[in-house]
Amino acid sequence: MEALLLIGSEGADQRRLKSNLLKRGFQVLAGQVEDLDRLCEREGRFTLGLIESAKTERLQELVQKMRRNLACKELPLIALIQDSQLRELAAVPGLEDFLILPAEPEEIEARVRFVLGRLNHPVPGTGMRFGALEIHLDRYEVLLNREPLELTYKEFELLKFLATHRGRVFSRDQLLNQVWGYNFIGGTRTVDVHVRRLRAKLGPKVAALIDTVRNVGYKFLEEL
Image (tube, rainbow, N blue to C red):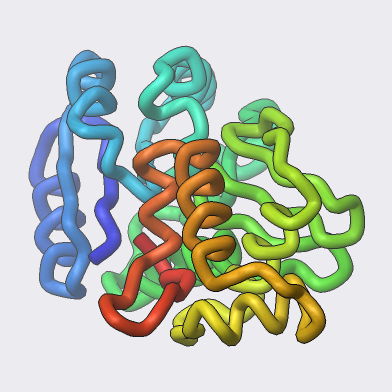
């Protein structure tokens, strides 16, 4: 289940928005600007942030504040704005998307799912992104929190293969054949060792994308 962080002015509008998102299957934690640091530190479990302010300057300050917080530094953000703010939105960098209020619940849900889908699916010709993890197939480069991640060639190939076949379970023998080749003389323990090293480099939160299927092998999750 996707967990959303909702930051904005307190009132009936925020409560209504939270209620609508909850009804549509999202987890939602809502608060005001002054609660931001406390909310961001709650397990770092959010996958998307929704921020609202009727003043563009205040919106910009809020984005900057979030980017200074380590727990929310990489959190994708959708700005909830008024129609009058549209021309000023270019002055607010760091947003994934925006939505003009008032908006119907179905439109809000569609925009949230669209952004989440865009972040978690391959971008043709460039690679793919899973939250803080970016895999650039054309450059053989992996970024974690926008910083290069040092992987060996086989670690990259294993990560690439799993990520490009999200949701499918592969046995150790299948992974050995696909990543190392049919002529590789090592045993299936090689796969376990590389998965363990990959998970260590990815860190606890992102490493959870590589799921162990007991008595079978591994799969790359569709989402956390």
